[in-house]
Image (cartoon, rainbow, N blue to C red; front, side, top):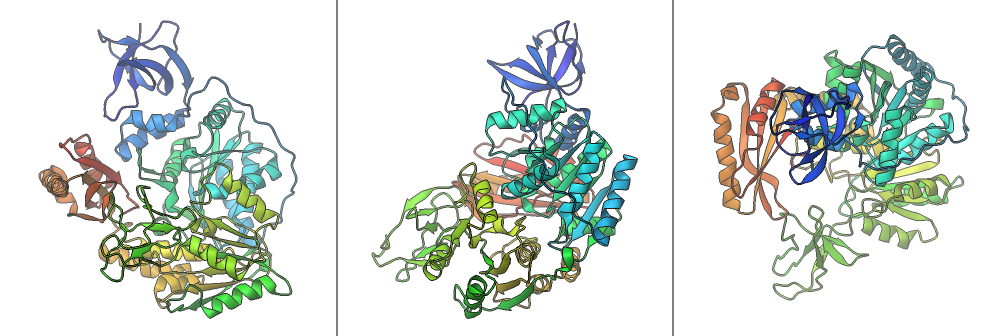
Length: 640
């Protein structure tokens, strides 16, 4: 009888010994059902083990994971400092008894002729595919430069070799348009993301595992798709924060995991963006990634003209109103996109008589007023309060200040009531198929004014977007985060890129900081000017990519307990042998000092050597201090 070391989904760095039945053929990566305490769990065999007297018997083998996926999960466990059982539990689909076979759909569209820049990029990547070697390509192309057509050509090359391809997108809202283009071209392709039903996720997974699925399109979790013969991964909009998972374990970057999966499987990975992350472009300069540029839009179209205007406290400047009217009522009417990265109606409720503000009882932030629901909502913990008409302190009238997408919608509906208007943000897309519905309405011309948060900045490729208006470019600029400037530049550049894809387009950015290099560079479609300024700042401040970063967040319901625990953790790190190779910042209270009734402190660790940070976090993992919680993160993105 053989014994096996099995990883089960518990939050500890340990494996458990089980014995296998005689007829059970198991190996590293076999998914099994095992008894654990008083229940049955799905675990993954890591390796053969030694005889153990009290070992329980494995109940059944469910499947074998592809070798590259098994190795990838082992790497994630080590690099992101997360127990292997937790990694596998996130990787595996919800287990069902039946799955649905996917059907082909009719093919509609033929090839589009490539320009010289596209052709060069395609041929370079194709050569790597033919040679079956690993390489990471940064496909740096301006908005509308035809990156998707290159992807489609390469997908065709892959499936002709009887291999599979994985296409990652940062936002679920982008998937309907991408999957439509893929199915139109090839008649096949399926999507995968967390909003799908359990049955659909299981069907996707099993079809990929059995080799019935050749093209997968999905969000960051689809990087674990169990393709047996994967030949290419495409990471579209590689710069997006949405590839980062930081709220639940494992805390990982879908982009970086995709690159590692390519390395393990020995096939190329494409990172595509009009606004590459600073880290990715730095990897080009260091020779780790290969740069492929698409400096011009397809069909010889010009990038849209961008104007910056100071609204001087107004929601809409005169210039903004004029451009909206000219676009909608011109001789050749076009559609309008309006962008504001703040949802709700008004972000602040305040009494000017006594100074009272509506704040969340659970979190250290203001409540946002949502007019349609007539309530105040916390955008962090989700708690709700009845809208107060009068101040609870002094009885005077409460003022609602600022604006969000709901208020813009109300103002637009007053001014342009004869036009079809749609809002696209988290509130309006909570239903399962809402992204697809909005995309289909856009496609059919049933939306003339689309307004929303960063959902509208990515992936929307329609030829008749004549005008894009940015209500406030400064919303994210002053965040207490060293990446705030980069995020602002990317958002502005991406939303501006929605205009002028079929005919001349125009963009207007409302900002009180028109000379800031992020806003100025975005208005000039000049990534390199932005990058030169930003990389200079990162070097002076010793932030990534010039150092590796780890973040430790300490939470407790008592402020003093949170502070004392943070100091205790700081002192523990200070006594470790690795201390001389790191810089410790903090502990200090987090920019958002309280979330869901927990006070929060954080410690940042910097080091030139990434493995040093991994070692420190591994030593801290599972550290239990009464009435406090500790979370650990490698390569953090969210600093709030």
